Image (cartoon, rainbow, N blue to C red; front, side):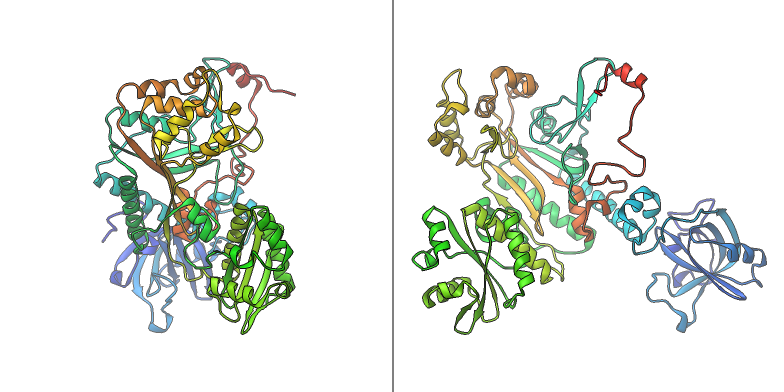
Length: 612
């Protein structure tokens, strides 16, 4: 018997999905789940499914009288083993929708390996049950071909990742999961110590400090496909535990990291999907991305670029525009080809999108042959109307949207409208993958509530202008902190940019990294800028500060969100579609009931007591 080189075992010689016309006349044994069963009187037809595909089984009582009763009684999701002879289907019976559609297996022996209870939903291409039911019975949901295809794609992406970085001399090195809590940014998941009562480990949000320590240890090229954890509010593209491709390199500058990263993403797309990415990836500063697309993670699969029309309407009669401009605001616009004449319902919906992002509203206009139409058009002179049309390079029948507000609010509102309209008009229907690099992020930002300065990326990111950075920190009086500095000083600090960069794909941030601070005095200065005293800095980051004193090479890196990349490659709409056992948006596992209660004995052993 000719066996599959991969699957020959006690229970099967071949996978259901690998049988082809080349196997015609061979005796094989397959095993799997009943996907369908049809009783045609004298013959029973069963589609048997495994993760490789489906195969039609024909049970003929003249060939297998014993198997006929098993086949007739078979229910969907019963587990069967079938031995028989492969034969070509008649030409009029070929099923082009099945990879095995040219053949069938004439059964000579059918064995019931396991009986099934009635499944809570039909296991097929479409998920007919609620998401909650699917997560509760995830092991059944994972039998569905779409999820199996996604997880197989994920496997191929992981293998391609390892091959690529191995060829580039990167070492895969594991870093600890039980670490010290250094709460910066998202909340840590805490793990109480049984041995040291009152003390806690944290699960890592990133291996950031450890991969920097590896650079100081001489391992100049590190990579890890690593699990990380963040206790934060969840979305469709966020989970409490997630996987990232973590990369760090020594003796590099930004171009070096971007080259390795870009080559990796190109290779990943080629090996997993057989698609060639357009290179080089376009590069934008953060401000440029906001100016043109209203987002620091722009979707470049369509145009709809934003334009500044402030100068066009600055001297006009429309009071709303004039008052916003007088207060230092801006008027921005975008044109949507062929979308003119929106209904009242659409206008209301677009207005609500703009308001969600802080704008007071949106001005919709339609390009006509002789200017603009719309309620506000009467307040705009013919020169203003033509100026707007020319600035946007718009044509008759196009929709024009204007937002007047502060710089960031106007741009982000139009950026959200840009995405919303692309969805409505199905501008991404043809698919495609458009990458971009976003650079020149601010080094720090000011927390709206506390007024404290916080790191935009993380506190280990190097400033783009180290001399200006050092001079500003030097202005902080000894024993004082940034909170007591003047507004003018704060403005100069907020204008500092970082040596940070984000990778963007189809409107999603898929990776972020930076060149790190490798001088101990610069790192101490950064902690001081963020309001940490020397004692606090040593308490939280003492081991890193100490390590920097012993000769740290210039280094930098990046971390890619592996789950998010796989989601985009699979064309999925949620991370839950590409993770085997995901959590809900409330961070619950409906499968095993976690998080769950623990016994009083377990709490006593940890030295813990719950509040009432």
